[in-house]
Image 1 (cartoon, rainbow, N blue to C red):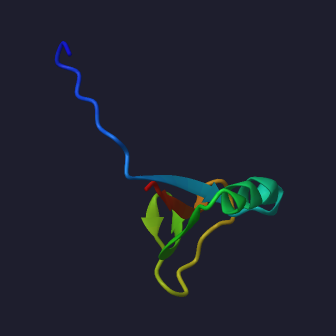
Image 2 (tube, rainbow, N blue to C red):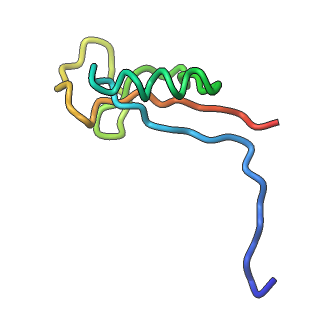
Length: 69
């Protein structure tokens, strides 16, 4: 196919912002089967260590994943 590789995705991940005004989006993802990846929260795309300070802005996220069968 002209050098284009087609692959089937086995999972999708979405960074869900943790701010209160993003609650409807968080519920939307949960109702569609997305679950936390189990690593905790991320800040600026890095997993936060226990008791590490951070700012609750758009960079504080929870990675939600969904496997496709």
